[in-house]
Structures are given as structure tokens and as C-alpha cells.
Image 1 (cartoon, rainbow, N blue to C red):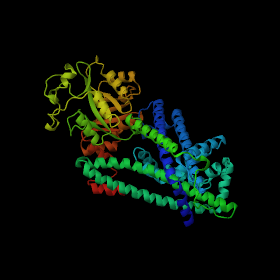
Image 2 (cartoon, rainbow, N blue to C red):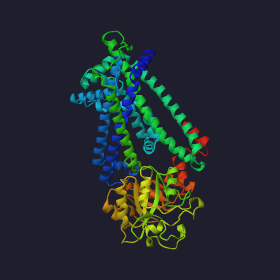
Image 3 (tube, one colour):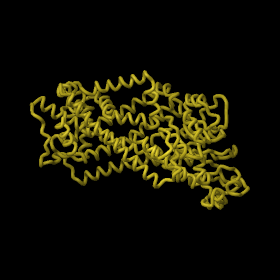
Image 4 (tube, rainbow, N blue to C red):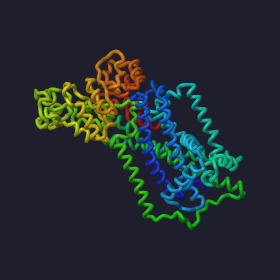
Length: 605
């Protein structure tokens, strides 16, 4: 066993830098592409099912629809193809290491594509589900962490774990993966290196393993245990460092909320690193198992993994400048795709999966004057998912952000906003009434707000009821589309006619109907995607009914900790509050903690 571990370390180290570059770039490029594809398939299947949001109440009906099954099958198929290409790249790199040759990242990519194409030509389609099974088995610990700790998929796992039938099904899946994984652990090597078809490759894998399979399993278990301990230590260090940074640079009232959000995001980074390390380590070990067991089976002599002095690239040699150029281009492409996803709001839209989100009411209106740029900046600092803003038009048709129709309360001017031009509004001070610190704060235009929030925070744009003759709905929809922020904005109103006009202009824009109270099946209308209702009117029955209809439920205005806890238990989709930091602390912490030290202990545990 010690010899196998030493040789695994030797094989990994030889081309580790080049393999790390390939893995990171491949995961970034393929991952961003796959996320975009999955996001579009999810939206398409939801639209075909007539749903806007997905919850436990309507998930069963949604999953059994033909379009949903087709979309899930397409997503799984594309994912399996990407897995096979990645495995082919790993085998290319380690095949070179087995012969003591160095190989650059571009050659690894070329080998990955060539091997994947060869398997397609040989019609080894069974490698696709096998790659998926291997990924599940190799990343089982990390996937368990993801599925039980990261929102929003944790609510699905909670249902599975608490049901005896589903729990038994999960155990059977694990047993099945183990029974499949052990005899097939060398199939990718026998198919891609020895050019065998799947059936012959499977028989060859079992032949090579023979009675030595316990040694191979023991090697993989030992290496993965060490890897898990390393990741746990890494996560603990990150949590402690994050706590120190947050304590130093974040206001005390928001520290717990910010730390919870930061740790959740950093955990995703650790999981990303972990999945790469698992693949690199496990296939390095399998390479040693393949060459040593195959050599012993045929020749009776161990394979020599010694590093020779003459380590060259052979026929696949590529000039350094071309390697750097192409690698840089791939890195640039991946970074551009990630930036595009974040900036233009095409990242995974977890809100459709029932995750409770937080909306800052008129911006962070307890920290800065409501509906101002200062309030929006404060909401971003408090980690709000959305800011709710109110819009109406000036006398000259400019869409501006202000709640009151009369400006006396916020500006000390007893005039209606609609009777003033934008140039007149620019002269008003709407900050002094809140605090002298904000003297000179003015009413912003919706255009200014969209520019400031794009890629930083989502917006709930409420259309004030200013009559039937206004072009406010069309203007707001046009501005949202102009800034490509359809996935970052929802449009709400107490006036249903406005929402009908929004949907007529662009059916893909998400809309919400604001209600103080109501009775009956008012939520079944197709003119809006969610209801926004007073929190005191919300009940478990209402939440379930709205969810079963495929819509979401936002509640306002929730400010006390007790009410926030109540809304969390009811399972609402969005909480509109004047205290976004307080809401995030209550909604997102996994256990009740009152001090930073308690939170650190909980996170590390």
C-alpha cells in the first residue's frame, strides 16, 4: 500500500501544474456553459408547465411533465459528455506521466478531445452513464455537503432524508454505485488506452483487478480520507479568516449577516476546489493501479514509474508562446463568460427553486433616506438579494424613483411629483429630513438605479398607480430590456392592469401583484408570477395553495425577529423588510447564535 501511495504522489506531481491549469480552465469554461444551459432548460420547462416557481408542493407534478423529462434528460446527457471529456484529459496527462513524459495543458486538451471522439466512433455510449456514476461516487462526500448544507437544494434533501422510503432508496443507490464502481474502475483506461469496446474493456478491467481489487479500493479510501481532512481544515481556516476580516471592516449590526453570506459563498469555492482535487487524486491512483496491476498480470514485473532525465513532449511538442497564447485565450474566454453571467444576470436563478430571498424595503430605508442611491448602496452592503423601489413619472415623462405622490414628507415641498419636471426635481433635497449626513441627496431616475445595480443587486420595481393614461408600464419594461436586466428585475403593482400591459409587452418579464388582503383564488391569474402580500395575512394554507399553482409569495413589511422566524417556518419565497441584515442573519444561519464566537463554533462544527 505504501508503495502505491508513493507512486501515486510521483505520478501526480510530474504534470501537476499543467493538469491543474487544464482542470481549472475546463471546469470554468464547461461549467459556465453548462450553468447557462441548465438555467435555460429550467426556465423553458417551467414555462411549458405553466409555472413561475418550483417548490416541494408542485415539484412532483412538474417533474412528470414530458417537457420536463426531456429537459432533464438533455441536461444529464450534456453533463455526461463533459465528464467523459474531462476523464479523457486526466487519462491523457497520466498516461504521459506513466512514461515519465511532461505534457502541456493544450496537449492535455487535445488528447481529451481526441480520446472522446474515438469513443464516439467506437460507439462506447455506456461510458456516459459510467462517467456519471464515477462522478457521484468519487464526489460523494462533497455532494453530501452540497446537498445538505447549500440552499436551495438542501430542502429537497431534507425531504429525502426524513422519509423512510426515500431514505432506503438513497441507500440502495449508494450500494448500486459501489457494486458498479469496483469492477469498472479501470474501464476508461482499457477503452481509451487499449482501444477496446465497452464490453471487452469491462472484461479487461475485471481481469486486471482480479483478486487485487481490495488493494485498489483501500488506496482510494486512504487518499480520499486525507483529502477530506485537508478540505475540512481549509474550510475552517477560511471561516476564521473571514470572521476576522468581517469584524474589522463591517459595522457590528451587519457583521453576523455578512459573515453568514460570505461563508456560504466561500464554501462553494472550497467545494469547487475539492471536486478538482478528488478527480486529480483518484485518477492518479487509478493510473498507478492500472499500470502496476496490468504489468504484474502480464509480465510479472512491477511497472517502473521512475522519472527519467529525458522528459520531453515528443511529437506533441508545441512552442511555449503558442501554449501560453491559447491557454490565455481560454482563460480569458472563461473569465468573460463568468463576468457576463454575473453582470447580465444570467447566473443560475435559484429563486425559481423556492429559496427564501430578502428584499430591502425602498433600499435600506433605516440606514439611509428611502428610494435614494444611498439607500441602495446600504442595501448592497447589508447583502440584500433585492431592493424594492417605487417608480412614477415626472411632468416631462421621466421615470424617477419615489414613493409618495406628494413631496411634502420627503422634500418639504407641498406639490405632487407628477406636476414637476425632472429639472425641477433635481433641485430638491430628499436627504435632510432623514439626517444632516445625507443633505443634498436627490431623487434618482430609474435609469441611474439600473446602471448602479446591474450585476450587483436585483430590483423589485413597484409601479405607482398614477392613472390609466400613463405610459409608465411600457417605459419601465423598455428600460429593463435596454439594460438586459430581465433576469435581475421583477415588476410589481397594486394595479393589475399595469401588470397585464407589462406581460403584453414582454411575457418573460416577471411580475408581482401587490395585495393588502384578498380572498379566493386570485393567485391563479396568468398576468403575474407571484403575489406580494401583507405578512399578517399569510398562512400555511395560503403558501401551499400559491406554491401548488406554480407561483411565489412575497411578504411585506417584516421587521421583527419573531415575525421573520414565523415567515421562515411558513416557507415564503421573499421577505420584504426595512432590516435586511437582520433578516439574513435569521433566515440563513443554521442554528441560533447570538455572538460571533458561537457562530464560528457552529460553522466549524
